[in-house]
Image (cartoon, rainbow, N blue to C red):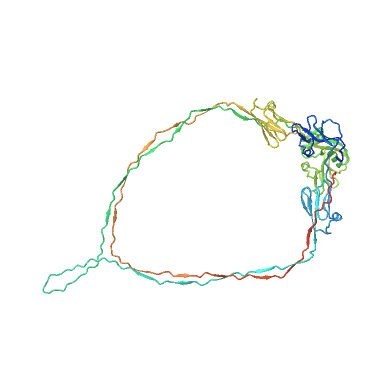
Length: 558
């Protein structure tokens, strides 16, 4: 508004009646307009214009001035300690360390490292340095300063003596033996006396004592009566068997067709280019004197200097523009010793093309007489620009598929639509995020900026032959009764014999085992002894980092 507020010009926005919202020319939502309170458009006012300082919907055929917007390229970056001192930063004359930090990504480099894009170097000697297409960096330096006062420390030392263990001798006590004598048990028959008839001489009576007699009782035999056991009868019932009447099945067969992809959205070039390959559109421009002018011309027309990325693209460019001389999107990096794209990224597409190396005097890549050649960057040549096109409409339907020979029934019962790139599947009646609708009536349909889809259809066919099934029939068998024969059990006779009675027990001597008593060991731990070592004096220098310093931002327009 400050620079062009009085002019009338178109703004990058178009009213979408389908979405009822403003969208950018590439079809994406114009979310930047949300906080600006832009009035809605209509079917007759599909364009957005700046008129007298106001954003206003208007018809797309109103005469106006043109205001273009291009994206510039960042220039060089440089941060060093000399410049920082000149701006008043307190940095020592001989720093001992450096760190460089990308203010956009936070990537941190230390002394001697190079950034991930191989464009910025961080060194103690030169600071943060980058020649072209650079991010903004800030730096900080580490310095050593002498300690203003030494520090004395008296650390105590503690010594602990190991514990001492004392064990008392064991004491053994033996009890005297104990003797027990059992009395004998004797059974003795009474004595028998015999008297002789009287004679002239009467002899004195003689008494004979019989020895002890041991009496043994005769054995006793006991015979048990036999026992008869009869088991109860057992009844067994067989499980039933079931048989049902036959069933006939005549369901139709449901089958899906193969995936069908007969149409790919064509590429629509935004600036009327007549040459395209895939999503790339190509246009030639005027003759320029150096590579930088060629780059600026292509950027002003919405693109970049032609970028060769595949052998197929090289073949197409050679067929269409092989006789021309033009710059190619690449420059030689003496730091990395390889070709890089103009945005600083690796030119991986050139690896399979056998491109010769560049040098410090031949830093640009050109197409000369059909050959990719390293050359100086100030050679006059034609301009060849490359722009990214927009996919056109997408259409897949069953009628077109039948005309191409696909066997699809006249009345499909279902449809599925699948995104060839992402694999997303839409069912009948669904709509994708890019606006494609999937319906049984129309197939897969999208009007603008569409991805490629494939479709398949489900059909019903009559079963060629019905299937008859004979289910099981239930039959119940009568129960079966089984009676076991009686069982007789006879116990064997039992004989008991009494032992003889005479028993003389020998004396029994019992000796108690000795008893040993051992006193538990006694442990004595000496108290710790603390020894204080002599004092230690520390005089290490102090290391400090400076604040982050950002005095230079890469300029735009390189």
